[in-house]
Amino acid sequence: MTRSAELPSARLLIVGPQGSGKGTQGVRIGDALAVPVISTGDVFRANVKAGTPLGLQVQSIIDAGDLVPDSLTSEIVRDRLTQADAANGFLLDGYPRNLGQVGDLDTFLNGRGEPLDAVIELSVPREESISRIAQRAIEQGRTDDTEEVIANRLAIYERETAPILDVYRERGIVDAIDGVGSLEEISARIFAALAARGITG
Image (cartoon, rainbow, N blue to C red; front, side, top):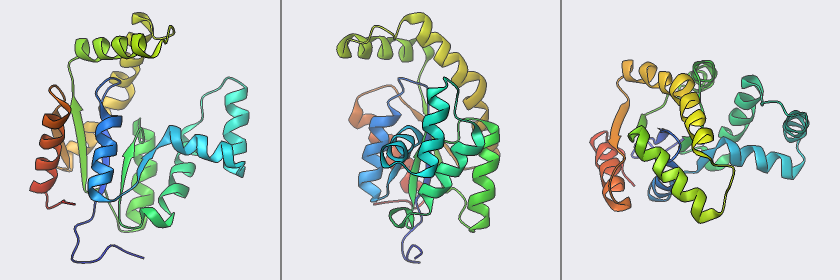
């Protein structure tokens, strides 16, 4: 099943540091375009809960205190993208998170003749990200989100994930969105950028 020729495709990726609000905006985009939001964390949990072969592999790796390798992460995402609800498009959140995963995703999507249509980059100053995460930690009673832990997570994002944006910028598919403002203001910026590419709900 392929997307109707009359409808623009909506194969999207949302990228931003922790605290950028990409999870919240991702849900809004998915709802508006009627495409599934595919978060690696959610897909991992669904596979583990369902006891799939992939899920069992993930569980054993996590139980051992190790990180899920790129090869397995990519395999799980590929499996998710072949499901019926993603036939007309999708929004990826949290994948690819490094250059190796970009290569894996390219191989898969190009093999299907379905490259990404747009990459939404939510730009938020580092201080703003730290402030938002710290505030969220207080609201949720999370004591593990210390300023040191938050800074370390942001450093990993800057070192490993931010470079993938250069790859997509060279392809001319990145829309840099100012991630500071009200929820509605940021959503409006995102939808205006997508509409300029002919992507509308």
